[in-house]
Image 1: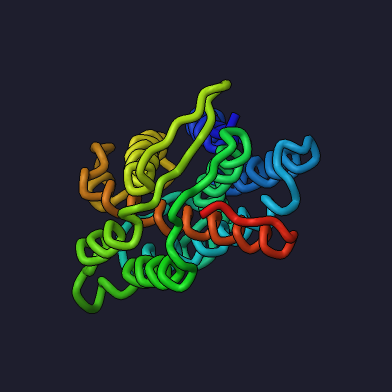
Image 2 (image 1 turned 90 degrees about the vertical axis):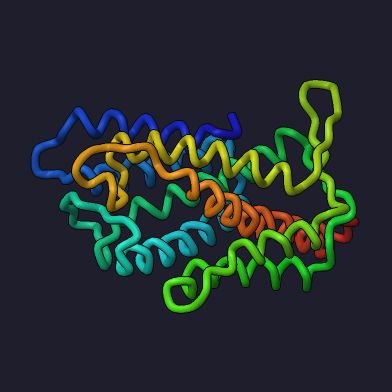
Length: 245
């Protein structure tokens, strides 16, 4: 259930690859489907309005990153579409939003809590540095490995607790980051197979996404998790509750 939005996007990618609607480009069809499903998620109360706000933030963050990366030639969206902005179809933001949807759903459904969560200044600074590195590494050194080392320093004592049925489990926060990033990499292979976008080496035919992309998703998951966790803590403080630390 936590993966409902990502699964819907995969299903839409698969169906739209083989089923075409005359006069409606595939990218525009995907945008309409994602918008309709987002409305369904809120109206059915599978997602709350607060979660929708978080998801919208991710949509905008992801869309900005997409526009920049496509401009730099990191990947491309080769098909035509009316809803493309600077070469990027607007539906692509929902792929980032679906990650936020998963995090929000899992947080609630698995009763997630955190211990030894670092101070807000440390995590927000780290998250901002990671996000900026996705832009700046085209012009200066790629600092991803330095940022990974800093991540382990910042989160070395942090644990995430979650409930499966009636049993409580825990794992180090960095392990959680890696596992989510790894499964997103698997999802990325599925998405590129169905033509969601194409890396330069996939333009003549589909190939496995390079393993180095796992590190990129690992870092992006850190940014995503930090945003959700900090918003949860802010909401708890404003509501008079005590955030999990």
